Length: 303
Image (cartoon, rainbow, N blue to C red):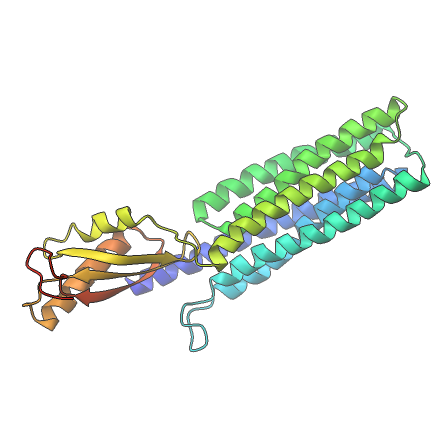
């Protein structure tokens, strides 16, 4: 069983890396197009959106590095494995988003104070619409793969890219406003983009902080139902779970009759563990503490 689970982990990390590499190539193309036309026309909203897309590429590189590190098996220094490197990479995406918010705000405020009007052409609209379509496809692809692989890194990156869809719509609207004679809406759109990015950053920070702070992952009732399906089990308590959604560490106390041998109790604990791993393959390991039932419980004389 351990060998099969190890193979599953390696296959999963390989699949995550392939998704990130495909998305990286698309994000680089999108960012390059936006920045090139943004600087050529002087549209600060398009430039801001280009920087936003560029952080998508940077986060993809960080994700690829983290996914490679996460593939390493547990060792003496990391007995629980290296899976949280993915979570740290997701936290790195949050830092990248903060930097982008600062850059976008600076560029927008500079345009508002210094003035100026961007040049809007048919090519500007063509680039934005084409990159918008690419972003929509990327979000759909990455979110679907993230759910299939239970990867918070892919889901966080998809959320990041989704903000590109919203900001691209804001940029298109600002280009229309500039053509209509309202150039001030270009830097205002850039500030709106900054708000979108900040919101995405908050969502990524919220999700990663839950993992890094060991927030409960699984419902106690679900675990108890599986444990109590073993006839010899008299009860369980102190159920705790932590980790990412696809790499959960579980520990719990299970009650057995006080008059059975240690050998038999140990055998039964493995029956419980195997059932848990079979029912919930996302559990990386389950530590079961053997106890006699507490006083007051049927057949119990323990503490």
